[in-house]
Image 1 (tube, rainbow, N blue to C red):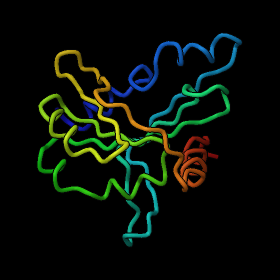
Image 2: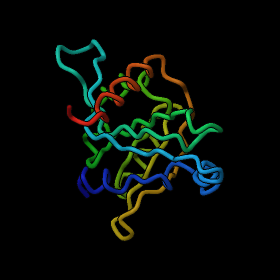
Image 3: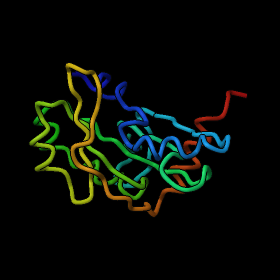
Image 4: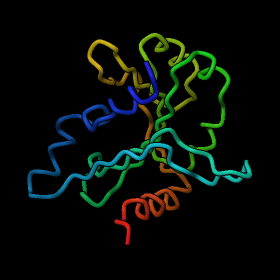
Length: 159
């Protein structure tokens, strides 16, 4: 499995139930879903910006089409990267939920090493899909406004 395989498998159905996904469509409201790969955040712990593997921006989770949810996904495809890398903890204030996304071969290790409140997504090489094996807790990050403004700027067409 490669990081690209796991990134391409991220879909709304992974994060939300069909009931959550459908409720915005009942009254003609629009569901927004966008995955940003290598999303830059200035955490202040390095001279260079850190990069989330993926930031998923959606309005599918809550009661209003205007309530945005930010899911940070840290992709790990090797056991050594899963065990040694700790910079992902710096991303927590920039998101509402945090996830590890790993191939099936690392699922048990990810469950063991995932920080408290983090969810685990597992990629299957057979189905080429991701499923939730541990749900992430919703924690509105203190720096989420920075994430939202950056995502907005990245979404604007080139002028």
